Length: 239
Image (cartoon, rainbow, N blue to C red):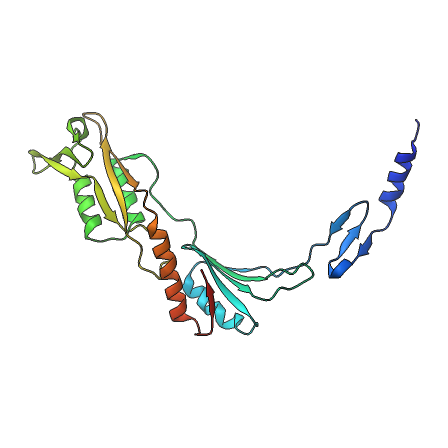
């Protein structure tokens, strides 16, 4: 087998001890190519509530130049303001992020499943109570005889032991889903209610959020207000 000069050079290169270069305080390892050395950074503390982050801030306050960064309505980070290490990075000291939330799935659900899901996904209030009574009293053949004009739907409701009545169901419902921190009041979001199905079958119910996303800015602002009210006055909060 012929061994070329390139093969020999490659073998010698692999056997060569690594050389560390340190141009401008940024270390590289020289072994065929320049590879930056990974600078160890402390792992961030992971929290799930704003109150937990406030409590941790009491410890982190001993570290100079800390910043609180409100990334969105579901995540806040506590970072060191000073650039550290040869790569001049800011250390992330702690991150408060909400765990996965139980939200309404897209599409239509059977009436019985819908009744269970909305009670776990939304704040219990009068509006939700009206929605539950509305959907809970639908008859099995309600959707087969419903009329939808885009604003209201007409469906058959149970109104007694052996009687029924047709009523209009409004389309827009203002509900408060669990979408931000438990320490805050949940934002109100408008949802469109829709029914469908076949006569003689269990109705299927769908709840769809409108395209207005202003509630996210509202939730972010409330997050900032909560932190300002619970952190020292000198705390720097970015949003």
